[in-house]
Length: 321
Image (cartoon, rainbow, N blue to C red; front, side, top):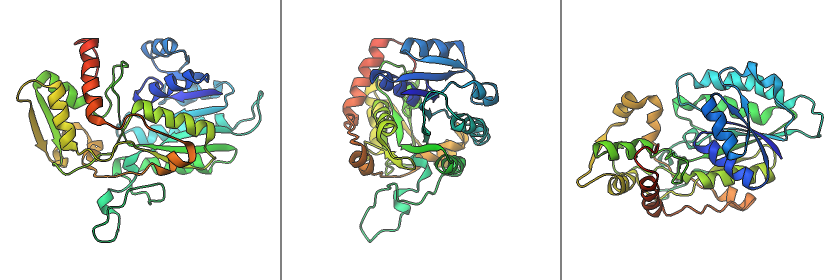
């Protein structure tokens, strides 16, 4: 397939580009800088100059494609308007008549685990812990309420084969120079011998490796029925305290400090999106596994942290987390 991607040099997007090219798909990706353009070319993709904040400058010239994947997000307060403006221009470009093939363009839109409630907020029988799945009603964090509008637009547009992927917290351990949700704490462990724990010891954040979530995007692109949504989570049983301990062990030095701060302090320090760092959840990916055959390979988080420490040591002190 000929596939267009936004965010193709980001954490999720770069893994998707690598994965799809390995499966012989042709990738066209948006590049807002020469650095991004060169990264995409090195990966084997064809860059299109443009920025998601100015879709009117490039959407009209988008070539005929079979599918599109939207992964670009900057977690800023402006993201709601940016995403709405992008869809205002991208959806008409994807639904215009095509010259070289028939049928609707397949369009994967990215949601996320913070679109769903905390696990302990779901009514259950006494003593029963119910995992969030695709049937759970949305209850997004206020900072991601805009995602509901995007999801509804993509799934309800005529002549567009909309599909939604909800990744859990994404991390990476490879040589792409990114660590995802772990990056901040890995950096402070290395530079200040300190890791920050948000909200306390009893919080569980579902996680997924970038390579595994890239597999899910490809499988959904190739096999999912239009209108379907899938949660992608591979690790549910590691607390944020255990994550902090592993980062301190592998990336800090002796007596690495673990500082606990409140959710309010995290929001003041990092931005309102940081409310999600104390969002306690257990997610089910049974639907993705049953419908699409998704089988995550990265399920041992402790082993991944040990491997990631070796990778960063090999890349050297100038590698980017």
